Amino acid sequence: GLLAAPVEKRSGHSTIFNIKADKTMMRKLEENEVVFARRGTGIRLSFHFYNTENEIDTIVDILKS
Image 1 (cartoon, rainbow, N blue to C red):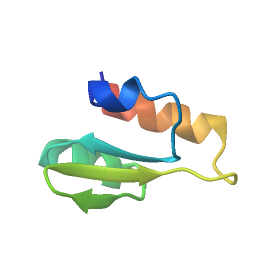
Image 2: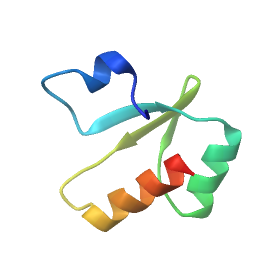
Image 3: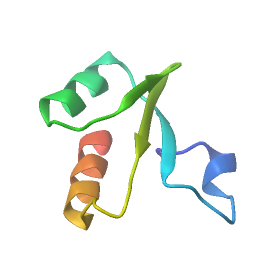
Image 4: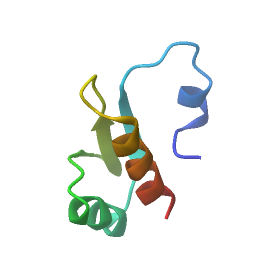
């Protein structure tokens, strides 16, 4: 439920994700030292080869909370 339906159903994906997030969510991410860019009504997260699975799991847990 974090991604828009058209994005979720794509056959190919990028490592860049735009996710709806309010100020409370942005504050939680900042408190957990997650680097993101503000975009419109949400945030942009970008992952790369140096990100660990644990880091990604942590970000997902924060977004789901």
